[in-house]
Length: 233
Image (cartoon, helix red, strand yellow):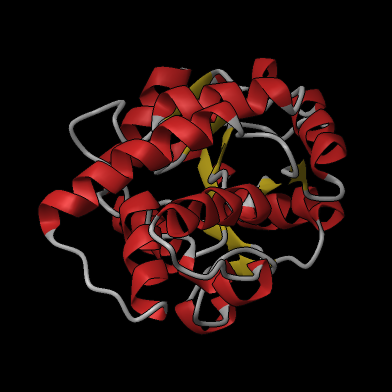
């Protein structure tokens, strides 16, 4: 069932990637552990390092080294970041998987006339490559990463420019994410936001003030209907 929109503007659903569309933790932590091993440091189990994910690769490296009790100079962090990006790009979809129900949720949104887009703090090259390898890259009208524009989340312009590139309107948009960054970005852009609780956050997403929280992607379409119907009035 299509959702009515003013002036024939198609509604748009904008997704975060890591921790929202896909569980990328195993491959991100796997790359971190390669870096730690090169430095003679013990690897971190994924379950322990999951909460270190979410603020980008530099922060993940810093947090990993802090957990190992080793400090990094800014210059050396730059070098490790370079190594991380190369290794991760070559091993981006070894253990990464879409969350259950993602493909079906995208189907339902497309059937209802939604434009789909991705707004992620992954670099664009990695985001595009990962979604292609997961078999859903073609579904998104725009896939905008940390380096796509001059701005990146939590700057709301990252989100609004992604919407513009995809051919949508902020007035007919909804954001889906898993973290404080996603929620703050959407709120600052004046766009409703739905959070998933199974991603990468050190604070339960319910405490961060999203408009709605869903536990599974089969709840996404009804949740979006609840948020967007008032906007169509």
